Length: 189
Ligand SMILES: Cc1cc2nc3c(=O)[nH]c(=O)nc-3n(C[C@H](O)[C@H](O)[C@H](O)COP(=O)(O)O)c2cc1C
Image (tube, rainbow, N blue to C red; front, side):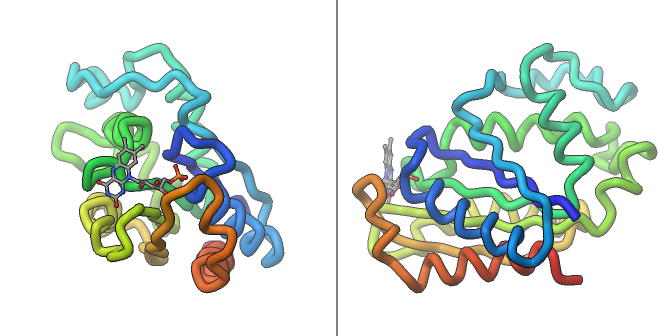
Protein backbone atom coordinates (compact mmCIF):
# COMPACT_ATOMS: atom_id res chain seq x y z
CA UNK A 1 0.00 0.00 0.00
CA UNK A 2 1.51 3.31 -1.12
CA UNK A 3 0.31 6.86 -0.49
CA UNK A 4 1.70 9.68 -2.57
CA UNK A 5 1.51 13.19 -1.12
CA UNK A 6 1.63 16.10 -3.57
CA UNK A 7 2.47 19.54 -2.20
CA UNK A 8 1.24 22.46 -4.29
CA UNK A 9 2.57 25.22 -2.06
CA UNK A 10 5.93 26.81 -2.83
CA UNK A 11 6.21 27.59 0.90
CA UNK A 12 7.95 24.43 2.12
CA UNK A 13 7.25 23.98 5.84
CA UNK A 14 4.12 26.14 5.47
CA UNK A 15 0.50 25.39 6.27
CA UNK A 16 -0.34 22.99 3.42
CA UNK A 17 2.94 21.19 4.00
CA UNK A 18 2.19 20.75 7.72
CA UNK A 19 -1.27 19.33 6.98
CA UNK A 20 0.09 17.08 4.23
CA UNK A 21 2.63 15.70 6.71
CA UNK A 22 -0.24 14.99 9.10
CA UNK A 23 -2.10 13.10 6.37
CA UNK A 24 1.01 11.11 5.49
CA UNK A 25 1.52 10.31 9.19
CA UNK A 26 -2.07 8.99 9.29
CA UNK A 27 -1.35 6.82 6.26
CA UNK A 28 1.95 5.58 7.67
CA UNK A 29 0.34 4.71 11.02
CA UNK A 30 -2.27 2.70 9.11
CA UNK A 31 0.49 0.68 7.46
CA UNK A 32 1.15 2.52 4.19
CA UNK A 33 4.45 3.37 2.63
CA UNK A 34 4.39 7.14 2.02
CA UNK A 35 6.21 9.55 -0.26
CA UNK A 36 5.92 13.32 -0.64
CA UNK A 37 6.57 15.25 -3.82
CA UNK A 38 7.18 19.00 -3.50
CA UNK A 39 6.08 20.38 -6.85
CA UNK A 40 8.05 23.64 -6.61
CA UNK A 41 11.25 21.60 -6.47
CA UNK A 42 10.40 19.91 -9.77
CA UNK A 43 10.42 21.22 -13.30
CA UNK A 44 6.83 20.92 -14.56
CA UNK A 45 5.74 22.87 -17.64
CA UNK A 46 2.14 23.49 -18.62
CA UNK A 47 0.33 21.05 -20.93
CA UNK A 48 0.77 22.05 -24.59
CA UNK A 49 -2.35 20.22 -25.84
CA UNK A 50 -0.11 18.77 -28.56
CA UNK A 51 -2.27 15.59 -28.48
CA UNK A 52 0.75 13.32 -28.87
CA UNK A 53 -0.17 11.52 -25.65
CA UNK A 54 -3.63 10.75 -27.07
CA UNK A 55 -2.08 7.96 -29.10
CA UNK A 56 1.02 7.06 -27.14
CA UNK A 57 0.02 7.62 -23.51
CA UNK A 58 3.40 9.26 -23.12
CA UNK A 59 3.81 13.00 -22.59
CA UNK A 60 5.99 14.71 -25.20
CA UNK A 61 7.38 17.25 -22.72
CA UNK A 62 10.70 16.16 -21.31
CA UNK A 63 10.72 17.51 -17.77
CA UNK A 64 10.13 15.99 -14.31
CA UNK A 65 6.46 15.12 -14.89
CA UNK A 66 6.94 11.69 -16.56
CA UNK A 67 8.70 10.53 -13.38
CA UNK A 68 5.70 11.79 -11.35
CA UNK A 69 3.28 10.06 -13.79
CA UNK A 70 5.06 6.82 -12.88
CA UNK A 71 4.66 7.45 -9.15
CA UNK A 72 0.96 8.27 -9.61
CA UNK A 73 0.43 4.94 -11.38
CA UNK A 74 2.23 3.05 -8.62
CA UNK A 75 0.34 4.71 -5.73
CA UNK A 76 -2.84 3.33 -4.15
CA UNK A 77 -3.87 6.78 -2.93
CA UNK A 78 -2.85 10.32 -3.78
CA UNK A 79 -3.34 13.18 -1.34
CA UNK A 80 -2.90 16.69 -2.69
CA UNK A 81 -2.35 19.73 -0.50
CA UNK A 82 -2.63 23.25 -1.85
CA UNK A 83 -3.13 26.81 -0.65
CA UNK A 84 -5.54 29.22 -2.28
CA UNK A 85 -3.86 31.76 -4.54
CA UNK A 86 -6.30 34.31 -5.99
CA UNK A 87 -9.36 32.09 -5.37
CA UNK A 88 -7.75 29.15 -7.17
CA UNK A 89 -5.02 26.53 -6.91
CA UNK A 90 -1.35 27.53 -7.19
CA UNK A 91 0.40 27.60 -10.57
CA UNK A 92 2.52 24.61 -9.51
CA UNK A 93 -0.54 22.47 -8.75
CA UNK A 94 -2.36 23.53 -11.92
CA UNK A 95 0.60 22.67 -14.14
CA UNK A 96 0.81 19.26 -12.44
CA UNK A 97 -2.93 18.56 -12.76
CA UNK A 98 -3.09 19.59 -16.43
CA UNK A 99 -0.30 17.12 -17.17
CA UNK A 100 -2.65 14.28 -16.12
CA UNK A 101 -3.78 14.74 -19.72
CA UNK A 102 -1.17 12.13 -20.69
CA UNK A 103 -3.23 9.40 -19.01
CA UNK A 104 -6.17 9.84 -21.41
CA UNK A 105 -7.02 9.09 -25.02
CA UNK A 106 -8.68 11.58 -27.38
CA UNK A 107 -12.12 10.78 -25.85
CA UNK A 108 -10.89 11.43 -22.31
CA UNK A 109 -10.94 7.73 -21.46
CA UNK A 110 -8.03 6.26 -19.54
CA UNK A 111 -5.50 4.73 -21.91
CA UNK A 112 -6.04 0.96 -21.92
CA UNK A 113 -2.66 0.24 -20.35
CA UNK A 114 -3.30 2.81 -17.64
CA UNK A 115 -6.88 1.96 -16.71
CA UNK A 116 -6.08 -1.10 -14.50
CA UNK A 117 -3.62 1.02 -12.53
CA UNK A 118 -5.98 3.98 -12.04
CA UNK A 119 -9.22 2.05 -11.38
CA UNK A 120 -10.20 2.45 -7.73
CA UNK A 121 -7.25 4.70 -6.93
CA UNK A 122 -8.08 6.99 -4.04
CA UNK A 123 -7.73 10.73 -4.32
CA UNK A 124 -7.97 13.31 -1.55
CA UNK A 125 -7.35 17.01 -1.06
CA UNK A 126 -6.25 19.48 1.60
CA UNK A 127 -6.73 23.21 1.08
CA UNK A 128 -5.54 26.18 3.12
CA UNK A 129 -6.69 29.77 2.62
CA UNK A 130 -6.03 33.02 4.45
CA UNK A 131 -9.74 33.80 4.44
CA UNK A 132 -11.47 32.63 7.65
CA UNK A 133 -14.26 31.34 5.40
CA UNK A 134 -12.81 28.09 4.05
CA UNK A 135 -15.32 27.98 1.18
CA UNK A 136 -12.89 30.37 -0.55
CA UNK A 137 -11.14 27.12 -1.53
CA UNK A 138 -14.28 25.64 -3.18
CA UNK A 139 -12.89 26.12 -6.73
CA UNK A 140 -9.92 23.88 -5.88
CA UNK A 141 -12.21 21.23 -4.40
CA UNK A 142 -14.40 21.52 -7.49
CA UNK A 143 -11.41 20.84 -9.79
CA UNK A 144 -10.18 17.79 -7.90
CA UNK A 145 -13.56 16.29 -7.06
CA UNK A 146 -14.82 16.66 -10.62
CA UNK A 147 -11.62 15.10 -11.93
CA UNK A 148 -12.16 12.17 -9.57
CA UNK A 149 -15.85 11.78 -10.44
CA UNK A 150 -15.28 12.13 -14.19
CA UNK A 151 -12.51 9.54 -14.24
CA UNK A 152 -14.06 7.19 -11.64
CA UNK A 153 -11.33 7.60 -9.08
CA UNK A 154 -12.36 7.08 -5.47
CA UNK A 155 -12.81 10.48 -3.80
CA UNK A 156 -11.85 10.21 -0.12
CA UNK A 157 -12.70 13.80 0.75
CA UNK A 158 -11.36 17.29 1.31
CA UNK A 159 -9.96 18.92 4.43
CA UNK A 160 -10.41 22.69 4.21
CA UNK A 161 -8.57 24.91 6.68
CA UNK A 162 -7.80 28.57 7.22
CA UNK A 163 -4.40 30.10 8.12
CA UNK A 164 -2.24 32.95 6.88
CA UNK A 165 1.24 33.14 8.41
CA UNK A 166 3.75 30.40 7.71
CA UNK A 167 3.20 27.49 10.09
CA UNK A 168 0.15 29.07 11.77
CA UNK A 169 -1.90 25.91 11.05
CA UNK A 170 0.23 23.99 13.56
CA UNK A 171 -1.98 25.50 16.29
CA UNK A 172 -5.16 24.21 14.63
CA UNK A 173 -5.68 20.80 16.26
CA UNK A 174 -8.99 20.22 14.45
CA UNK A 175 -7.45 20.67 10.98
CA UNK A 176 -4.47 18.47 11.91
CA UNK A 177 -6.79 15.73 13.17
CA UNK A 178 -8.90 15.92 10.00
CA UNK A 179 -5.78 15.70 7.81
CA UNK A 180 -4.49 12.72 9.80
CA UNK A 181 -7.87 10.99 9.36
CA UNK A 182 -7.77 11.70 5.61
CA UNK A 183 -4.42 9.94 5.41
CA UNK A 184 -5.88 6.93 7.23
CA UNK A 185 -8.77 6.90 4.75
CA UNK A 186 -6.17 6.47 2.01
CA UNK A 187 -5.44 3.03 3.45
CA UNK A 188 -8.84 1.71 4.52
CA UNK A 189 -10.93 -0.01 1.80
C1 LIG B 1 -0.02 34.93 -4.28
C2 LIG B 1 -0.96 34.65 -3.13
C3 LIG B 1 -2.30 34.72 -3.34
C4 LIG B 1 -3.20 34.44 -2.30
N1 LIG B 1 -4.54 34.49 -2.56
C5 LIG B 1 -5.42 34.18 -1.58
C6 LIG B 1 -6.84 34.19 -1.85
O1 LIG B 1 -7.31 34.47 -2.93
N2 LIG B 1 -7.68 33.86 -0.82
C7 LIG B 1 -7.21 33.53 0.42
O2 LIG B 1 -8.03 33.23 1.30
N3 LIG B 1 -5.87 33.48 0.69
C8 LIG B 1 -4.97 33.79 -0.27
N4 LIG B 1 -3.61 33.75 -0.02
C9 LIG B 1 -3.16 33.35 1.33
C10 LIG B 1 -2.70 31.88 1.41
O3 LIG B 1 -3.70 31.01 0.92
C11 LIG B 1 -2.38 31.55 2.85
O4 LIG B 1 -1.35 32.37 3.34
C12 LIG B 1 -2.02 30.10 3.07
O5 LIG B 1 -1.89 29.84 4.45
C13 LIG B 1 -0.70 29.74 2.40
O6 LIG B 1 -0.46 28.36 2.61
P1 LIG B 1 1.01 27.73 2.65
O7 LIG B 1 1.64 28.15 3.94
O8 LIG B 1 0.78 26.27 2.56
O9 LIG B 1 1.73 28.25 1.44
C14 LIG B 1 -2.70 34.08 -1.03
C15 LIG B 1 -1.31 34.01 -0.83
C16 LIG B 1 -0.45 34.30 -1.85
C17 LIG B 1 1.05 34.22 -1.62
